[in-house]
Amino acid sequence: AQTVTQSQPEMSVQEAETVTLSCTYDTSESDYYLFWYKQPPSRQMILVIRQEAYKQQNATENRFSVNFQKAAKSFSLKISDSQLGDAAMYFCAYRSPRGGSEKLVFGKGTKLTVNP
Amino acid sequence: EAEVAQSPRYKITEKSQAVAFWCDPISGHATLYWYRQILGQGPELLVQFQDESVVDDSQLPKDRFSAERLKGVDSTLKIQPAELGDSAMYLCASSLTRDSYEQYFGPGTRLTVT
Image 1: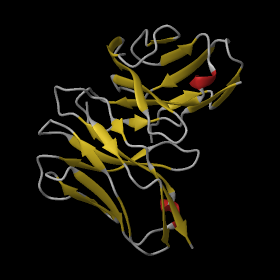
Image 2: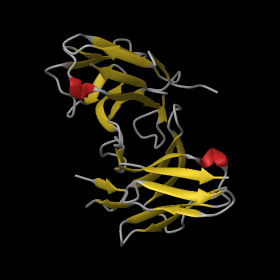
Image 3: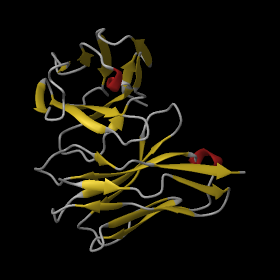
């Protein structure tokens, strides 16, 4: 079974600075999807960024980028120019490739605080 | 912008009582998921529907939990009887198809069992 580990329960960053959230995973599958989801307080979870394992290029979405190290099974999220609205729980998630289970396997999350 | 709707947002119930949660996915989404998120943990899948059929309910405690999606649109998750350990956030998510990588989440129902 696949597992996802987020080793940082809490992180903090100063507004306008850069922060990196860590995620490692364990799987025997060669193809899969990885995601970072954001869950603001009392609001629904939204997708921040995704990475397909077969793609070597790291995904980027505006101020959010990932560092995907397939051999190391590592998938970190970098938030640049942090904004107050980035404060939230961030979850790393894994999904099997097409034909496998569609469920998302989540880590325990990292609470990000942005200080003004 | 279309969103997944859930109700109620908050529910307090006494143990041994029955409780039900409702989810209305984004229109046209064939796949619906119910996740349970215990405080301090990530969400874990309880049940997955494709249209009105159950695809995966391997983690659903079937002695007390039931889920249905009778017309392949909205869905109800029921707990009877509720136990103290059921206190959690219950999240509903939907996706256009089983192959769609993105799941859209609702705001959740926070259940407290006293």
